Every structure is written in structure tokens, then in C-alpha cells.
Length: 346
Image 1: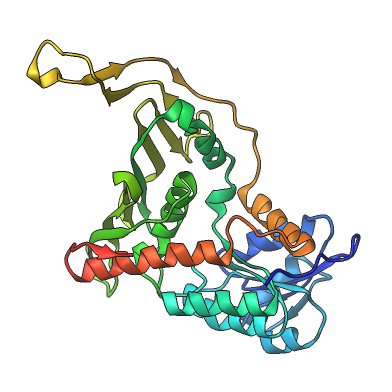
Image 2: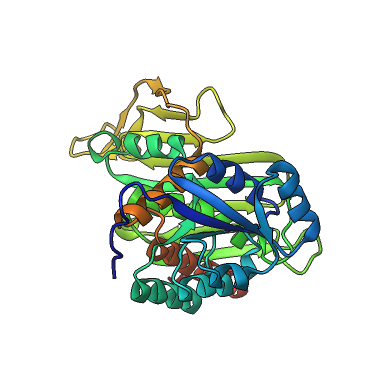
């Protein structure tokens, strides 16, 4: 159920829950957004709250999230806590009438995500999930470069997200890293996967998989492959899309040429080739282009869309429903890993 538009000119009062790994970035962005008042920062750690007061001397701090939600002083909540805490915090915020932006994933299983989406709909509140790469100017440009008239038929996508850590204590490498790439794939293709196949391993000898290779099957035979790792000394943040007319590459670590597209491709044709091996294959070769990308901060873009969704009632791109689709794929990947790579329906 959509919520009503907020009165024009009324400042949006926000609470930030969590000031650990990602919370300080949210605090910086939210504190500078026009039309927004970051009224309180919550965290269970007294040390972290001391850091908040040192950085923002006039900021109210609290270790009592229940008290903040019940106090009536905030309109919306931004949650940047460990993944295993997301579901109960989102539920409490929605049940107390607040709009919510939560870091991914919003819950660690599909029933939990469905319950939160239903709760947000019944309450008429915005539920948005923090998939910052959807608000990355490079990923947006990549989607532009994949327009059907220039990209042709989509063949496959491939993503690599590797580094030495940081190692999470509550989720494995798939739940930590793959949500980014699943979200990017779903956004680029305007689709959700039908099945998943994956394998993982634990080279660091912990209780959680630190390396995984996953394949997602989409409509029309399109496949997306994802490699994630906490134990690779070569940091890579790359997404590749290959179509019949063009190959598009997004490299988040290349500040000079973040996106490149190759006007090269191969398609089937009706002509008669000279040899059997060449039969009906038409190869085209063209330019390599690095399009201009206007610089912007993805986290700021994401927070601005959340504020706009609350103020206008528009559904954000990274809605709760979108986030639930990502978790469905993650659950299928994990089930496939338990079955040693057997395909699992999403």
C-alpha cells in the first residue's frame, strides 16, 4: 500500500542505527543532505558512540533503539548493523511506523524478506535496501551501453569480486559479496534468475565458505557467473556483459576508464560459409570506447532516492521487493553449494 506524500518543505528526521564499518559513511552523507535532519545515532558500543560525539559534537546518541523508535522524534530509520541483526531491527522500525533504509541483505532467508515486505506494504511505509552499486554512475552507464539496439542479444554476464578479506563473522563470502553482483545482474537484465548452481570452499579453515563460484540462469538462455573470494590477494571489482553486438566492461577500480565497451561480436547468419567450422557465424569488429561518466557518490545517490521515496511516495529502484529477489537467488546459491553444485530453482 503506497504511503501519502509528505508536506512540502517538511524536514525528514532520521535515525542512524549502527556506527561500525559502514555507519560512519551514512552519517557523513545524511548529515549533509538538504531537507534531512540526522537527529540521533544508535549503537550498542559506548566506544563507537564516543566516536560519534567526537565527530559530531551536537549529535544525540543512544544505545536504546527501542526507546528511539518509541520516542516519536524520527520519521525514518537507516540501519547499518551486522546482517544477522537486520530482520528484527527492520521489523521493529516498521511496526513503530517508520520508513526504513537497511543495508543488504534485509533478512537472511526468503520467508523473513517476504514478511518484511508484507509489513511495509500493510503499514504504507517505504522499505529500501542498500544496494549502492545500483546507484553507481558506472553501473548506470553500463546499462545505457546495453540498450537492445546497440548491445544486441544478451549472451552472458560475468562478475568477479575478490580481495583479502574483510572476513565477516556472521555470514559467508556469498552472502557478503554476491548480493552486489546479483543486484547488478537483475538490474542490467530487468529480470530475476530462474535457477542457480554453485560450489564453495573454505581455504581459510573457518566455519564459513570464503570462496564461491555461482552461475545464475535467466530467461532466453542468458547466464550470469559470479566469483567471490575473501582470500585472493588481487582485489578485483569487475562486471562484464557480452551480447551479440557489443561487450561491456565495468571496472570499479579503474578511475580513468570505469566503463569500456567493445564494438565486437559474433552472431549467427544465413550466409553460406566456406568451411563447416565457419558455418553461419558472422563476426563484427569495431571500436573500443570509454564513455564519459559524470562523477557522483553512489551512497549519496542512494540516500537521496530514499528521501525522495519517503517524500513523494515513489517506489525506489532498490525496493524491498527488489531486495527479496536478491535474497531468493542467494538462498538458491547456498542450497546448491550444499548439494555440491546441483541446480536449484530460485
